[in-house]
Length: 228
Image (cartoon, rainbow, N blue to C red; front, top):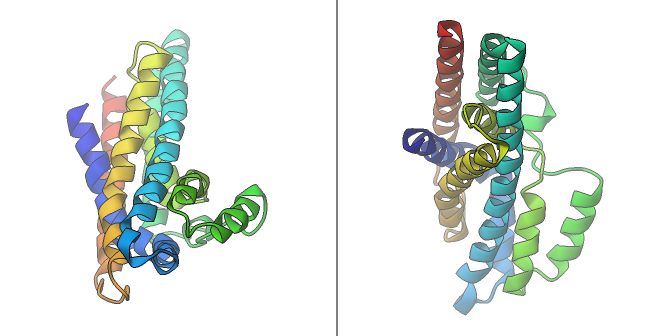
């Protein structure tokens, strides 16, 4: 488990510098512009706390479902097929995340175009100059369609499959997504502290490195499944 958490943490770092800067960078820059100089970092701490909490709760939910799926697979005698299929899905999403296969808009769109997320963002953005308002903003924007987050959630569900009970699976999935969210934190804080995002010249390379790690992780799942 500790090694797996390090994997999620470092993947979050790679995705943060490669993907989140382009997708979420404008949001954190806007928060900086709305904030007074003496409290410039406070809104970001509230925002990222809300975002990471959302990731953690989502990770717990998929972790609990992953544990339940594993139990059902053992009862039905299809655990091997479940593990191999999960590994294949992770590899496909990793390839899409790296741009090696058509990814669809979910890997390129920075915000939802309609629905409660957009409406909530507009309302909260009006009062984002107040630091505490950035916490619910982070909770909300943690739900934005995001390919790397979906990939991490899929991996978190697989990580929780060996859990004996759904509660243990919830904790495993929550810990994995908390580590992933914390990994994305440094890149966005650096963006908040700088007036321009052009300093990251190798962003695409770092992003693809994170996608490659995801693909390797999917390959490990397939290998483990074939050994059962």
